[in-house]
Image 1: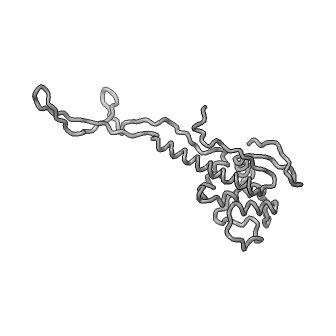
Image 2 (image 1 turned 90 degrees about the horizontal axis):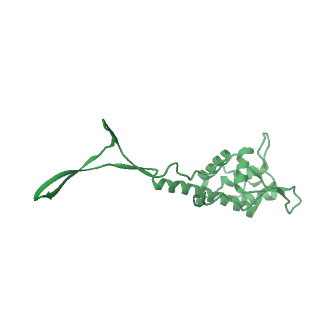
Image 3 (image 1 turned 90 degrees about the vertical axis):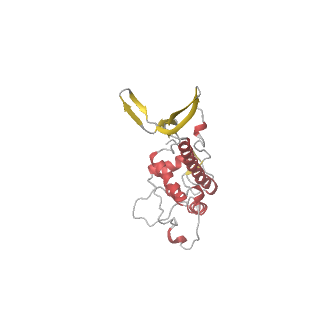
Amino acid sequence: MSIQMPIRSNSRSRPVQAVSILQLVEWAFQREFAQIDLDRVDDPYGAMFDTAPSFGMEYLMIERARLGCKVDGGGRSEPHPDADAVASALAVLPEGHGGRRMALRIAELARAGEVPNWRMSETPRVVPVEWRSTKHGEFARTESGGMLSYISRGKLREVETRYCPIRVINPPRDASRLRRDYLGWWGALREVRDSFRIYGGLTSFVVTEAMPPRTPWNISS
């Protein structure tokens, strides 16, 4: 993961690094092994806020920025406070952006250093439902479509019509589903980015506006 050169914050704190939200999330889950606690969307500051009402990302960001670190009881090696901030922000991702399921999806992809797959492995194509083997080779299996009557040379004639049942491999709806999944991930990532940019909450990083391409399928190769 490439990170830009450090820049100075406006406060007397140590230098911070400018990173994109994707770089930050990948750092948190790849290098710091952050974990999302979905069994209990915990108040990240311990008993200090036991009486706090329900809150979202804004509350987490503001309180982290005020304290400058995560308060815990110790006892084991913890991830960097900023990695915990990322995990906490994802844990309270709004349902409108996928909620807990999307949070886990973002974390899973970040650990692998990947983005959602929006590409179809093959172009859509039509193939017969079944094949039949003959001494002359493989042929599509057909079914009877009933009898068709017609007049030829003044006589009524009948002929059996046949058709070939088909199926579509990689139909367009599959491509649409992959793209919807990508756009959902992108929108959730932007939500987390905006929360960090507006409310802060990080001690060693500052989040830039940079985002992955919104519609990579429209980018010319």
